[in-house]
Image (tube, rainbow, N blue to C red; front, side, top):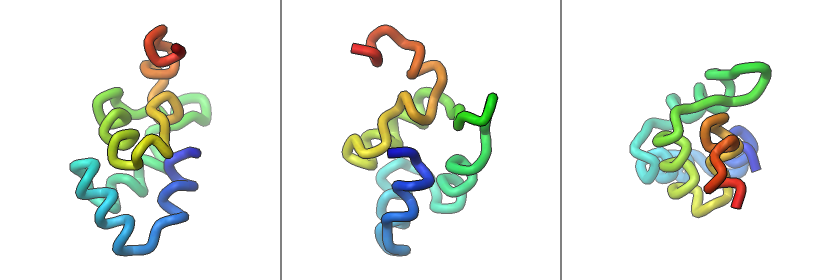
Length: 77
């Protein structure tokens, strides 16, 4: 699932809790889901992508939010 779709599934309280787990704010996550794009793909810093993956309990895999992670041989399994 991508970050925008995941955020859309959460209630306002759920988004706040997710943001806190990710060490971010709801607005930053919302901007990240819409912006920071390269060639139409969300491209966040790998560390931020890892925090999002962990905070979403794996629902938003880091390779969907970071090109570096998507190209990493460890991420590809």
